[in-house]
Length: 277
Image 1 (cartoon, rainbow, N blue to C red):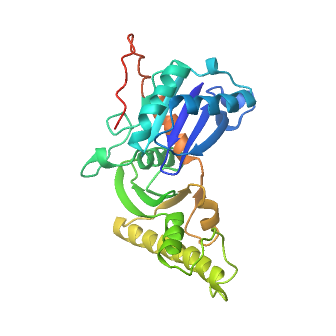
Image 2: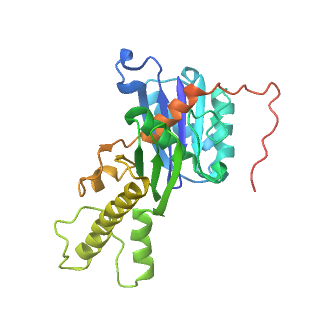
Image 3: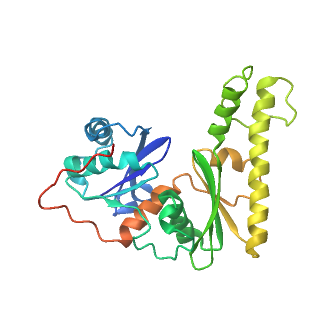
């Protein structure tokens, strides 16, 4: 089985994929997925204690894991995640980076600058829906990534995420409370909290629709739109411009990347990894 690790700015998601798939009664082969708050200082042993408990609860054993793949946009977290794979599962993880075989061209000025999550979304989105395609990812940042007919990655747009905007609104304005995200019943708020919710929700709908129109106009052809991330279902309710919702698109991208590339070989002599300062 494959251990998939998606380390984002807010959460690290661990998932286990069984290549036997649906034949074993597990949808698309996923045996389970679990998330923990991102903390670059969390050690491999801390991850292991938490993860082993969840694996056992799902009827899985450490020996079931035969390969691993890691995608991260938090470089400081990589040391401990790689250590986890080596020391606790005895596998050398594949690290998602531009130099791997993605099966498509990365047509940007500096491919190494592109976040692994954006390339993974492009890979999984094109594999499932073809192109041309726009992937909207509602994460810590809200990103729009453009994929052409051949699957080539063309770049995109990066905006502040919804929760970042909510927190900034609370921090910068002394009288505005910290609020949760939800779809308001009306655009015109008749008290402070509904007014804030309306501004963030419908403001983001306007941002989404406006950017999609401009991207499509610049590209010059009809494009499919796929949304991913935890808030994708919520924001898709407010617009007809999102065609597909796949909250776990990045995990699928990691699985596909692992299938396309040979598994790294565990070093015979396990030299000590240098922990980032």
